[in-house]
Amino acid sequence: MIQSKTNPEPKALSNEDYLHLFLEMMNAERGAAVNTLEAYRRDLIDFLIYLSGNKIYLLNTDTVNIQGYLEQASKMGLSVASQARRLSAIRHLFRFLMSENYHDKNPAAGIEGPKRERLLPKTLTIQEVDRLLSIARTRAKNARGTNRLRSLRLYCLLEVLYATGLRASELVALPRTAVNCDENVLTIRGKGARERLVPLNEPAQYAITAYLQELQATAKGHTGTRWLFPSRGKEGHLTRQRLAQELKALAKDAGLSANQVSPHVLRHAFASHLLERGADLRAVQQLLGHADISTTQIYTHVLEERLKQLMQEHHPLSQERFLKSG
Image 1: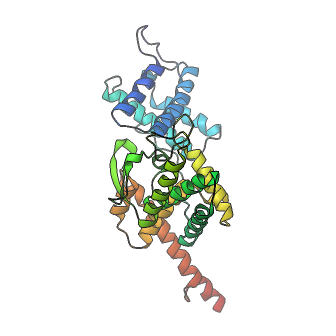
Image 2: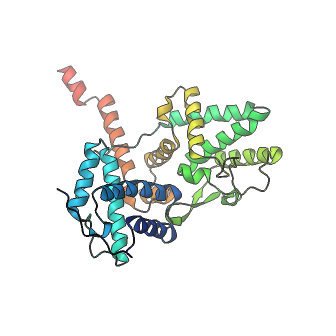
Image 3: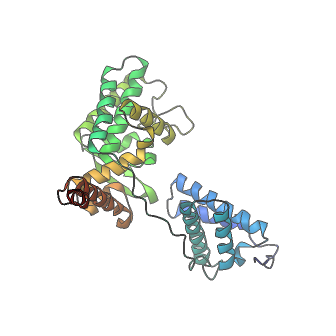
């Protein structure tokens, strides 16, 4: 049972004050992306609401309190993945409190996260990606009038996405200065404000050039914008949501399920196809902008599963064929 903790001194910071300081640190020192900060904020506000409802001050929180919160989240039907993410956010919060001498220990450190099945990332075959590219290319070539710029933009987005494996947030927020087709590379500022160079293949360079020529010719209020993919929305550039919508519409025309195609699935396809063709895992890690190679290693499991499936379906000595022959 949760016990109430001693109330803080009148001048002490509130639970919300500590959360604000933590998010400020993540933004200023870690260079966390806007989406990352928002995810931390949502998860930790939910935790603070739980503490407030049980009259628990953040600095008096112990392991039992955190376990109680996770048990409640589980009973409310929160997925295992979401529970694990919230526990991680709580650990990071207390790690910050310790580093700033607000707290002398991390009560979340010894809590074992909920067990979750490691799901392999969804991906597409090379043939499926080729179908998407072919339809987008044909649309761009044949489009006229007001549809031409939009068609060229989607073709450009698709070529760049598959050629580089960028995150959707990185792609839509590319500044025009990131593109230098003479050098055949994109300069990407990714998670943690880390910069990386990603090579562009010829089809991606061609798609960018054709799109920029049309954008310059039509202008449509985008003169002087700093974005490669400008939009009239408040962000000033194309949104991730709009990109996903256009890809799903394209998927239907390619005879694929809309659920099969998303910006992240194409990022997975980029990595999987590189490894399938013999690329070095470290090189793929750098191209994807992963801080830890363990994140990239998930794609080796995708290849292993594909090889197993091929063996089962086609090898003459597979167990299924052996049993049938017996």
